Each structure stands twice: as structure tokens, then as C-alpha cells.
Length: 100
Length: 189
Image (cartoon, rainbow over all chains, first blue to last red; front, side):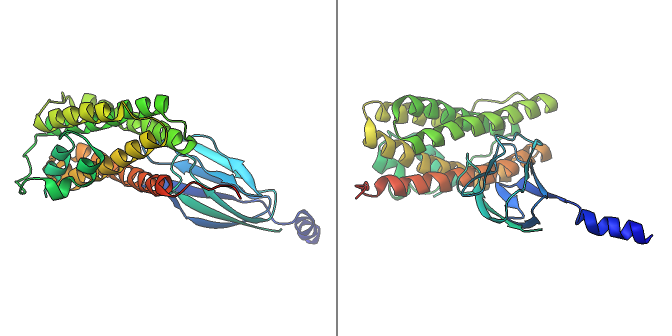
């Protein structure tokens, strides 16, 4: 048992998966806090395609997601990333990435 | 002014002023037309197709990256909506029925295209985006005041409700571009 606990401590926190739903031309939640190593999954529920695209110091682009498609990003670097839908720049979201 | 009149206003000979100030120059309000579901479906498909056609024209005419991107989005989004509308009509066994509102929209679209034809450069961009602001505002009003209230089929009504946020977002996007295009160009100093 003690060995098991030591092993867990050595491994550190288990990476999580977080979901951002795109519906009604909005990101839900619009702001999400994750930890380095976590994965963020965007799922598009809208009829029209969307992207989740960050062009700041932290960059990613899911590409166009049609209805019910998903895109993901593995958070590798701590920081705050503001992102938009490249097709609908009035749609905005924020990803806060904390260190482990 | 009724939503029907805002749509009908787009069928008037198109000029920037006419489109943006249609409300001030239109006749007295009249009751909204009582459309059947097949007619509502036809209006929805026509409204999407009109914006796709104008966006395709804009893509060939504009040199502004933001306007080109906006036009590309209009093509993608309205095509996606029409695909859903077509699939729903097929599922429900409904044949969209031509009607006076659709005909007004088509007539207005032809005149808008004619007005944009001689323009180029920044003048074209401003006129196209101004038209998109007026058009999406009119369509949004029609969705709220004519199309959703008169639709009886629950699935068709839900489709219209699902499409509404996209039209509202297009309107905001067009307004944002309209403001940008009206601003004096930066000198880069």
C-alpha cells in the first residue's frame, strides 16, 4: 500500500480531459482553467462550422469542425490564451493554463 | 415597420441609402403575411441562397482579406443551413413553395447585385458590407416576427431557432467590418 502511494506521488497528477461545447455561436464555458498536460476538447453542436484558433504566444488551431465534430489541444505550456472562431471572429474564448 | 416590410424593403431598387434607411422611407406597417410551412421553408432557402450568391460575387471582386474571409464564411454557413433545411424538408415530405416574400427577396437580390456591379476597391467593400448589415438585420427580424411565429411544424421551427444565433453573429461580424471599413486607413507611421 505504501509503495502504491509512493508510486502515485512519483507519477504526479493524472492529466485530465476538459470539454468546451460550441453551441448557439458561443464557447461554453467561455473561460476554462486547465493544467499543463491536460487536453481540451471542443465539440461543435451548431449547424455551421467553427474553429477554436489561438494566435497569441500559445498557438493552436482545431481547423474547421462541422456539426458534432471534435477538435483537441494538448496544453503544453503555461499561460493565458485568448482564442476565437476563425470563421466568426465575434466568438471569443479564453484558456488559462496553469503549471503542474 | 413589420419584419415583412423590412424584407420587402430589400426588394426596392437597391442603394446604400435605401437599404440602410429603408425603415424611414417605407410605407405604413401592414400585418405580417400568413405563410404556410412549405412557404416558410422556401423563404429560408431563398434567403440563404441569395447571400451565398452575393458572397461568391464579392469573393471575385474584393481585395480586402477581412471582407474575403467574411464572404467565405457566408458561403460556408448558409450552405450548411440550406443542407439542413433540405434534409429536413425531405424527411418531412415537404416541398418548399414559392411565394411573394421569396419573390421579393429574389428581386431585391438582383437589384443589389446590379448596384454593386460597377463598384470596385474600397467603395465595393463598403457597399457590400453595408448591404450585408441591412440584409442580416432584415432576415433576423423576419425570423423573429414572421418565420418562427407562423411556422407550425415543431422541427422546422426548431431549425429556425437554431439558425437564429448564426444570423445574429453574421450581423455583428458585418457591423464590425462596417466600422473598420469606415475608419481612416492607418499610415503605418
